[in-house]
Image 1 (spheres, rainbow over the protein chains, first blue to last red):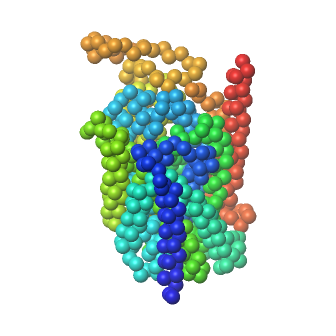
Image 2 (image 1 turned 180 degrees about the vertical axis):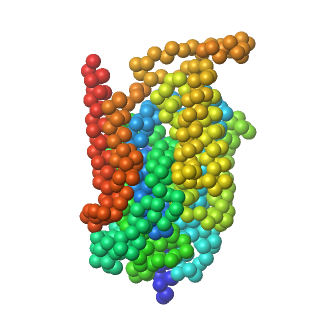
Image 3 (image 1 turned 45 degrees about the vertical axis):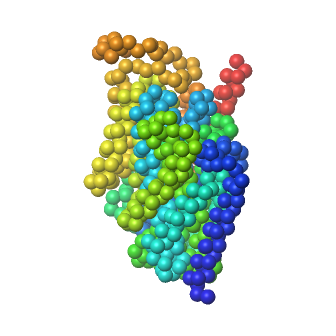
Length: 504
Length: 71
């Protein structure tokens, strides 16, 4: 048997075992929308924890982080900083979101905006933008799967065919399994991932250099510029680092699927205590970064940095262990891809399609539509992945530039009574317009700052300015111990539309 | 719902200062600590320190909650 066959068989075996484990878990249950999308709200603490802890182990962390350490150098350190600080931010906002969610029966991010700002339009905008910007995140997972199959098959299976296989497996898995299946596979995936990360991160430096210290001494002698910012880039200096870390830390819980996770906890205290332990997960990423740095010396000159971890693994380990690493990587891509597909398709069917086109749509039809959306979204991201040459990290940053624009609306909505619907809508639109025009015009970084961050600052300024110039609104999520010197909602009268009401 | 207390928010800013705003001061290779370049070591250290900061902030929030409860 050739090494390619050995490695590929192990990967297929692991994916097959994972899928089977997942589908068995979902078997024999009546699949309505709630069971399919949020497992009937039945997850206990341990299960939730596994889902949330596994969140940072996406293909992005596995292949993308090592890929950037390889191709860009020190700018990749931003990943360690932003994940840690994202958890710090979560300490202050998640317990509040949870409390409001329980009190008002919220399920999605869009529900939060609709209830806080009383605007169907804003809620719709949030859903559409959420679905739109989660597509690059999905694309990351598919591209990652493609890379895994390509490297593990010793380049016998081309990238495009591997991505096609990958997208079919993921879509079928979600289509038939639903959330419960995903959670079960997540357990297997986390275990395999930790084995893979530790074995590569410890074995590789030891095998080639005799330890981590000699590795970095060798790298510091050969390419000292690679280990400090801006590394191998011209534009990713300290301004870029600070702005990108701030943007990503604020956006960490603004993704539709991460925001929604706050509603599933048992209490606000648990979320707060989580934020003490969760930063420590980030430590494991250091092994992945070390692998990327080691690859600079061992396998220089790869055309695509995202392949560096796997190429290094292929060079250092026997074929069967390459298969284990590849299988772990494949599950690591499949689980987030499945969670994203589930969240995005449910969001589209429930919060976009139903309110706009068919208000009377029964729940079963929504569930059927959501399942069709799984296939549509999977196909869309497959086509995008075929035509894109972006690195995994660049894709993630694109997504963050979009979803972080929700941050002002969420934070000011929680902690500032004076914020108004007009303010948040104007800020969100301005932020999105700025982020997308800067990126489309290839002006990212913009004067050394992350374009998404520039858009976020503008978003904040406009949200506050417009809020101050529009009349006060009643806050449906009142802050304890603060008087709301407002106008209770009055029955609508013709005089309300007169300019006189601006004096409020 | 209640805003987090000012002290807790200030504690939360400490990791931002350590890991983000001060980057020009710690982004260098030497001195290497534990075999890691200084910037990598510094971030690793701050991951642990951030966790400790959050433990402090949590303590403050829980005391505040208890005081409110007793009153």
